[in-house]
Length: 257
Length: 183
Image (cartoon, rainbow over all chains, first blue to last red; front, side):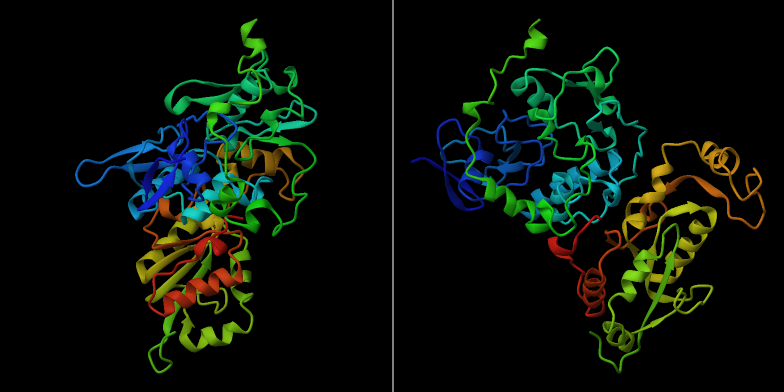
């Protein structure tokens, strides 16, 4: 931990193998993020954790969750410029899916909602897509509401790397990309997903839901009613470096067969 | 707050495709209404029953746009109000009414008035005085320029109070993470 980089003018120590985001969180400095999860390899897809590197005219931006920490880096994160970019990213996510917070049982525990609130997103700003995404209620204990999917792949990663079932996958490209269930019928009921699976715990939004427990926690007592996501993320730190990898073998038996 | 001797700020309010929950939340500022009334006077609003909006300083619009009359009223507000505010989830995102947007409008009308047992003897209402439903429900910013957005279903009384007192004091309204709620 002898080497450091600069984040918003402060020295941040880091361990070899840590990314900028991991080191920052460990040191008690919040960088907004969404698809990053401390137990999984960084994915770098949501870009909410984007930071500015270097000073003067020689600057570039990079996702801090995949940027290896290096001694001497000069990084800007908590600036109006970066936060404005993050707000726009969050706005696009809100416009692209069907995010009706008042009727969503994940409300108050939703990372997308908490991030928007913390960044001061007051409107999606863009024209809403209102896509048609039917739910999958086939499973007796689990509901899939695709309307809220933000394509972070956390359930895909958890199901493959930890549960070793590969129940979920992303299909299609660009704007047609969507979450699918890995069964011939395409229905969750025809998979071996279980309530105890890691994939049941990682959805940052309200896609993968346990049935018959919605709205059990009253408003005011939900996760992000208590503390904003920026404080909550630091509560969860220090976070282990991704080098330790997920809990499973990292090889999905279902895919190997 | 403004000096009481100054001309009062003129405020109009309306509920479009909303449930009046945001107006209830405004009333929920309770005794602070008296303080508010020292500084503002109401133009068109359910509180005054004035039918058309005259020149105003602030327009508070609850609800999204689900029919032609909603669009007409919104344009009247935009034309007359210096500052137009989208109040509540429906005005900001389309809200609950927009959850019909992935369905075909004709199918919705068929289901409600013909397939299901209804009070309308199996006929889809077509009186020319009824405003025509829009194909899709829209939030306000998709039709007119909106100056401020207050999310929430409804925004709490404290949220509305913070917004209005900031505005009346000449500050850019800021809600902060505590009052920026989407539900």
